[in-house]
Image: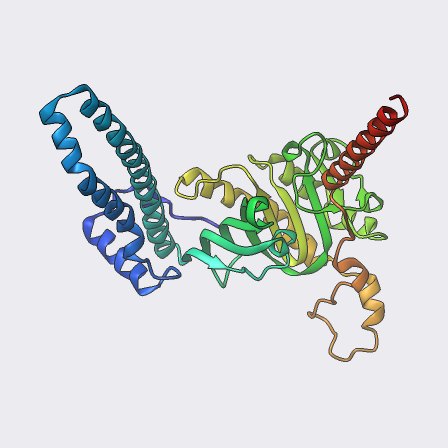
Length: 357
């Protein structure tokens, strides 16, 4: 039974705790050491700008001539704008500092590790191989137990003006042994009936598990693995998924189960950890015995002559079932069709114009 102590998230931070955690961050315990220059650069810029314009402002106020008042206003306006931006930045910084302080204390109380930013997380899930500059952010992780990692995740696509940052929330759970690659695409997270996930998969891999499950999820399994999907998602597992209070896109790959969402998931709120307990105890609690009983007959046939395979050693999944076959995202296809259509319309218009002159 997974249970988290959420008291460290709600009790006030003492000055001693704050100072100790800040010292650990400077040592690099939570990732890259904090740089003090980042905090003070904005203040330095503001002070320098104010010092450069202070004589003119003072002269305009003393003389009180209309021209001077106009100059005073024009000089003061950008300073006020910069001050407003700095205040918003300070507010954001204080909110983020409180978040990581609470999460670091929570991690200590629950035997977890905390990272402010960890580059290139090495997971087999579909999100973790997209784009570049990949990193987990404000995440808590453990080398033991069912819950392996939970937090934010981001990656970048494109460069220059086309650069785009994609932000997700994820939770990674360990399974007892490898299973075929299954994806449950939550329909509530999709837009215009198109998946919100960065990859689309061939329609030939769609599996129906019947209602009410099909109204909530689109299930994908490797071709010829439909029966395996039924075996791994019996009624009690489907019921646990449908009863989860938050809708996640769920991926099972190798010996991992990943939950993805682009909705806010505040790890400093106890309700988020109650939700993770529900998934760990409900969904994983129902799924684990099923996974323990599962074996891929295709892999068993291939392992018949393998002396290293025997009772208690789960057979691996056959190569055909290890990964879903992806296809081009339909959004990109629609954009390409629209672009080609626009070019065709422009060329047709030009031809009509030339021949009707």
